Length: 101
Image 1 (cartoon, rainbow, N blue to C red):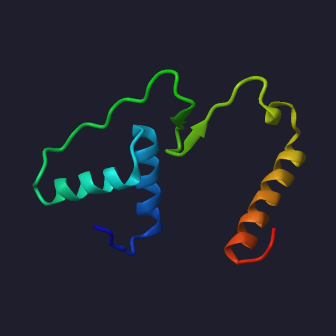
Image 2 (image 1 turned 135 degrees about the horizontal axis):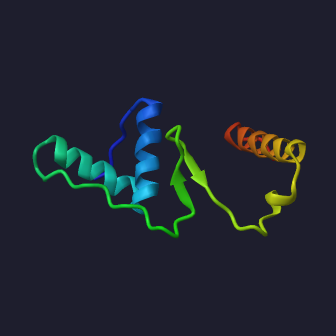
């Protein structure tokens, strides 16, 4: 059954991060959390991240995505990386606003 919930942003970000780290869908993770909260299922330990995973959790608790040595960003300077990020953010904002981008 589909439903809509209005959840705090930080809660949704944490759930998405956990789902990513566990290789699960957000839907399945949320369903398990609800089952646990309702006492319908035993609490399961989160599976460990595979050693060859490109995603890890940094010291600050944020996801760190490792790339190969031949990734284009490895040879870009800080100014080029910041410009690329700004272009992506602008494009996303325009799409959300229904503007061609």
